[in-house]
Amino acid sequence: MFARIILGVFVLSSAWAEEVGVEDTSVSGRLERANRNVVRGPDEPLVVDDIAYASEAERNADPCTSRGCMWPKSSDGLVYVPYVIANQYTDRELSVIERGLQSFSSSTCIRFVRRSNQRDYIYIQSLNGCYSYVGRLGNGQTVSLSRQGCVYHNTVQHELLHALGFNHEQTRSDRDNHIRVLLENVISGMEHNFNKINTLNQGTPYDYNSVMQYHRYAFSKNNQPTMIPIPNANVEIGKATEMSYNDILRVKRLYQC
Image (tube, rainbow, N blue to C red):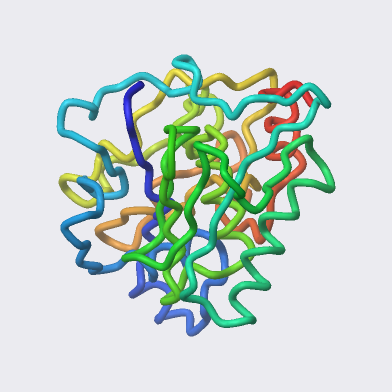
């Protein structure tokens, strides 16, 4: 199985945020700040902008859901995803992470459970920035939730959705019907972040309110939008504070809850 990691990173122009004098508390703003100028250690993955890989050869791999990266369903109809949390967090931070983990159990068949002796599990730790593998890799796989900016409810949910096999909203195969990408406003060398992926959309609509959606100023070089919703350019995008109805529906459909 190809091993791929995707960073939950969005770039919102910091100059724009400072200009309007507000702190951006969306997933977009929080993950951009947490991942800005980080220096990753020798044991962390190969990172190309907001995508990380186990090797250079994997950069063009197909979406993992077509390769069997889903977590297995048990005979009781539930999907148990074991986890371990590193002994790095305060009680408050642990509470935020646990709340994010358990938020899936109230609306889906996903059950994040503390690992006992299971072979495959996610290992939540505070490394450099926020990132996660996409889908089940096998054995222990890192979900990085740095204490410096990643421990918020929406960012926890975002990275866990990656671990379950989901990608960013604006990479959807049908995105051109719902957003217009303005590559002329994108930082040189960052254009690949807007490449479409042959995603499995499961009959769900494009969702501007998805916790997986980038902000409209993502990777902007000039404080101008890099994405504009269509047909209504004034629709807000990338400001989710938690999983949307469609985020939940996609989990249920992918895992046949």
